[in-house]
Length: 485
Image (cartoon, rainbow, N blue to C red; front, side, top):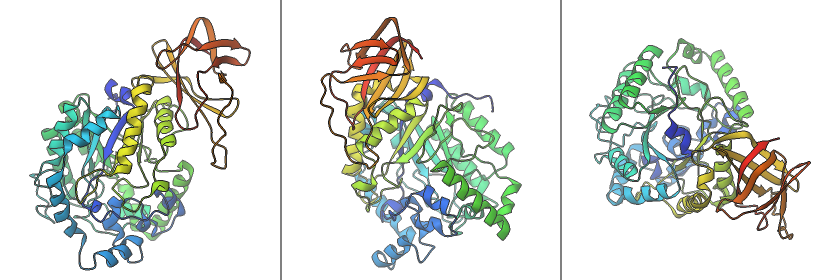
């Protein structure tokens, strides 16, 4: 198991689409004040009651003082969380999986990961594994199967997310802090239930990605056998880094002193990582930092996991100021690819009518337009000797490589205040790439093949560009037969 290697298809992909779609997307509410990393960094025993993740709505309701509980009391005074299932399933009547997936495929994404079961325990497939606490808590329509068929029709890989660590139909303990995550993990009987469901997902849908969350309820030997059987069924499958097996160390969370220690450790780590970076379990293929990226190329394959706004599930409260901008989205994909990672960008559909809102479709459109031109410099590339650089005049640089070609992405940085730079008035614009050493056969072209004049200097390779640099979209060039300085 430890010798398993990530298949080439995943390393080549660079972009995947995550889909969080649960009954919580019917009320579609979460506060917008903080992101999850900030909440964990506070060390507050009730911090997660203020979770910006809509899919945590049911947990937030367990804290009467939380914004979600107050919203729910005002909007749905006589309803519990389970009542949203009926509206969610009614919305499925208008679901168009082909329309969704066509938009995903247009972005250049190579794989799609669908949440099959989140922490609320509701399953998006007609599972034959009986939930002993909430029988029939699943969709009668095979959402997972239909999505898998649509994704594969568009020549992408299909994966499933499964919440192995939490299931609120088995354990409803309110989660306010990191230590509560351990206390809330279900006990006896759940491990067999979770394994049976994951085995069912593997047998029915043969997912190319097996994406678990939080932890795994069984011990390491049982987990190893499950993953070995998965690889036997899907030899080029990929497993993420959230299969932390059950351990006696979890007993630390049973004492007040132990919980305080765990919460301090979690707060320190969240502050240091500026986001969520799961601890490494014994068995995994890829790392999954959440709403944060690594600073450099990693020895281990990795993907940045994030939503379009501060939530994964659809949040009706989000405004433009809470959503990722075009500038940041395109640079995020570029930066992650330069460091050898993938971007797993989440889409959160609406629960009431099974549609994707315009703001999210707009961002899928930005990616589609960008990758229509820059895709060959991103997909199936590997990190170059220097993944990043900085040129004079506030120019940011990222590099990727394939064969004998080096791809350079350049853009103007914004001033620290966040305002906009004045447009470059020189024509043509010149930029010096300090990391590049030209050889006798070196050539430089735009990504579309238009040649650029380039001259070696003592400071690096000076290039005359055809147009002023933008602060929004990177300018992409191909440098052939060059060396690193």
